[in-house]
Length: 277
Image (cartoon, rainbow, N blue to C red; front, side, top):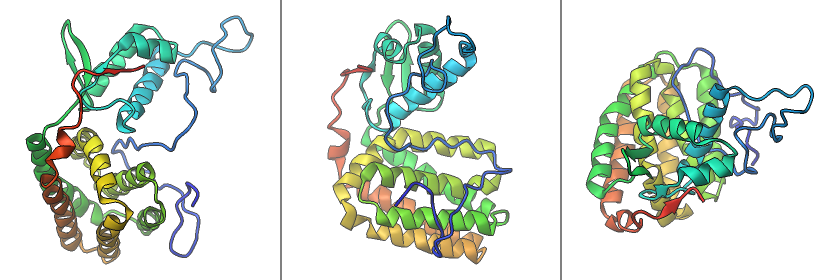
């Protein structure tokens, strides 16, 4: 299936983003490496007529998003030390935007920085991950229930299209990207920016463990996830805020119980391995 979600009737759906302000960072499909300092994908040639060097702010944004994608995609593994020199060489940037990007990503829960020591990809132990899931069990149902009164039919159609696409993919990273987009987009109509930022931070910090757990389950083990997603769509169409929130609470809680059975997922990350190559 292509990357454009469609409703159950096959109608092509646009992503409904008007008036919604919760920041969403989804995992993108595989694509050729991008030089964050380039213009329109080309190398910046300051001597070429008509080509202006990107602003420092634009370069910083592009570098931040590029590093974010490396972490969320698993290329930079939890616990690995980040080489700022390697990232600067990879992106054709100075160390200044790299350092600023890592500082932003630390605020997002993806990076840990220590003075005079450097930066590492954030890592969780089992206890920390379970704690985050317990918090999510309370926060995300609140976001979803608040969204129910404001969500439009078009937005529900879009969510349903994501659910359909999830059931049809066998690729783990594609499933994770769609699942993340489904949940974060379902909270968008709540219009609660502080809550949205907290939720996204928790999704960021648990991304690696969700990937490992999803691979462990395999496609056959995902049937209950798909069923729960469809039940949430039905609750949204009924404008049943309490029912949708309860379904989501059980959805997250079940995953926490399953993660608790697999402590090995939190023991496989080697410490201090170099990252950014």
